[in-house]
Length: 409
Ligand code: ADP
Ligand code: MG
Image (cartoon, rainbow, N blue to C red; front, side):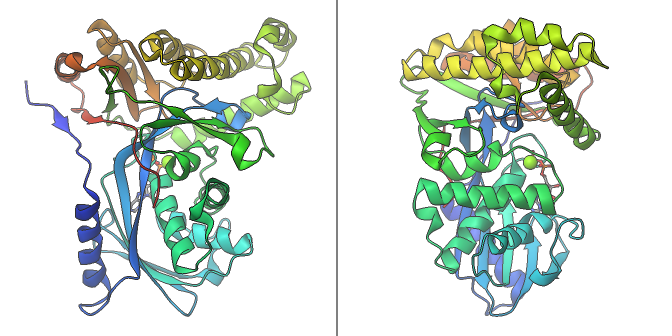
């Protein structure tokens, strides 16, 4: 068996050195950035496909971060380079950025400047370079890490003062969501950006996605300290390709909206778990009724599981959350139909080798899965997953450990 591939995070000093070098490579030997900023990817403990249903999610920030070196410009020009897009620079002027017209990875960056301007902040053009150890397209939110690193950079160079407190960070998060939805064109829900900007070390973020909540009411820090409990959170990047993900994500979202309309509620959060059977019965005769019932069942039970997971964590009962993770995965696989063979293989193998709980994380169709393990189970579980992928003839997965880490800064 080949040895498992660990995806290590970079130290702050290492990440900063990389983007400083990249900056002079891109913009000239005597060019210097105004500073270096970074933001983490995230892993969601539970609460999947709930954010766009006004539900609950419980992400933690990864130790893996995207680094940005940025220099403000007096004009509106944006010039970008990324170590993950070698050999190409990406250029635009801010006046040309808008929904449906901006393409390529620079949309995630210029989109943030566009959204901050839309929100009334005086933001000008900039030269910036990016490098990242957040796995790309792995369901760990490299896109939000990129947006949020740029958001805190622009906040600093324009003295917006938003990164200084949680309410301001919620505002930056909203700008990043608009960048992703409207400029990059990905209809994601908002959990990723909130996690990257508002998580904190040693904590998970209980995110309440009901519209109109104040920053204070929308995000609560929940202590999530694994070490004293003798636990480890293992993340497995399955490296599964998922070409259909965009259309499938939008289709799930549309089904939820249709179900809510049929049930006469603003969103699926409004359905009390105690009334679920009644709601499902009312969907029985709808077109695609069985599918809508399954989607609604996932969303309503998942929000409830997330609330119960957070309560257990608050009560210091970390070793009791496993069954909720398992139920979350089964619901995503069977009712929401967003799992994949590779994700199921990680989950089944981890469970068979003693995981307290295991589930897919992120949007699905590929990407990553997580397992909550006693520290001494990490090596055997990793070896078993590695062997299972080899036996199945699948691309070798990547492994990372995720102690709850620092937010963007
Ligand atoms: P995820 O967020 O799960 O990693 P997404 O598909 O949402 O996957 O985002 C990945 C996209 O984000 C990439 O295809 C690229 O366009 C952009 N991106 C993320 N990080 C970088 C980076 N460091 N450099 C350039 N583009 C990036
Ligand atoms: Mg993303």
